[in-house]
Length: 210
Image (cartoon, rainbow, N blue to C red):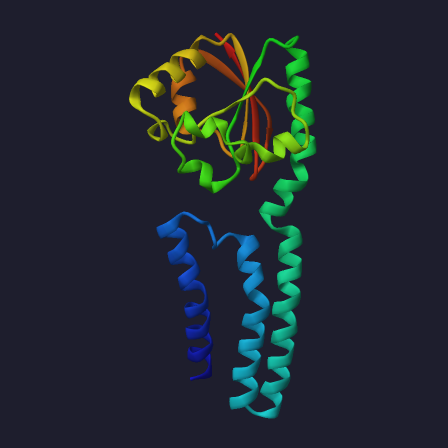
């Protein structure tokens, strides 16, 4: 019975965050937000267990409470979002190094790490500096251009012009959290790809005209 109650509390705690994420696109179920819920969840678990269990279970409740609170601290330090933020100086250094290697000829295309950018319409989103705030903060040299995650974020005519322009580029650098499927398809026949850096959080690649 107690196990079922704990599972019910866990489900009720997580389900609204998941639903809000799916319906609104606010990404509240991301690790950085879930970690914020650990401390109140710990108090809730502890209260239930202390009230309705024996002395030995109450000790377990105390340990569980401490574990949840400390777990939030550990996860916040090790979360992909935290590692992603800490990696920006290295990523920008690699982008600049590749641009220098091309004697400044390589264009730089970026995708935003913010989930809101995946739902914004293009080309209007290109003027949203908040979508590329980390690149601005760590002073990535201009010029560079923000790309959509999918071509459906723009009108068909605009998307066709974008693809044609990219296919005509002799060399360019892509940097983003993942290589967009549309970009891979658009350059499959026109460019060769050299991956400079790839991790679970980011990819940098240099594409050259075949």
